[in-house]
Length: 206
Image (tube, rainbow, N blue to C red; front, side, top):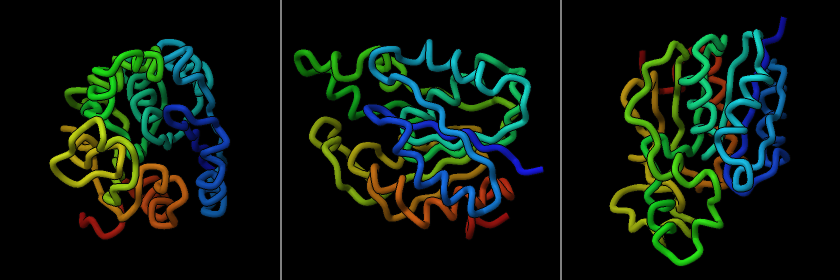
């Protein structure tokens, strides 16, 4: 029986944004489902519960881009009964987003982030759940995030590489892609398949 992978999109994106990656996972032998949510209007509370309901009692894996990684991790933190084996977070500011914090200092900026503002700004202190979590970060600095975050190190234009690191992760890899480019990167897709298959990214050692 094929393993099912549920994919989550990021902030300001529709579920359609995950279809290219879903196709790559299908080619690798996985069944895929795209989970869509209203990232600004509804925010994490409704999205987390909807994701928990969608997974139900099934055994699945998760692949999530940007804010979607935070939604997925929050769902696993709240619903510890979920049977999720592995989670791949792609360009997700798991430790909190400097770009979001910078943006929130501007007038009316809270409207752009909506109900997701707090989760984006704060992130998580660590991961201690049962699921194996791997993070893919991008290092091509194309994006508007640098205007608000003042990144000191490598970043993908929206999220700093350091923001994708979190204590408790099973593995972490940096690839040459921008934040949105991660969704259409053959290398990101290959690394996602590697982690889903083995619990390690390719070329990262044992």
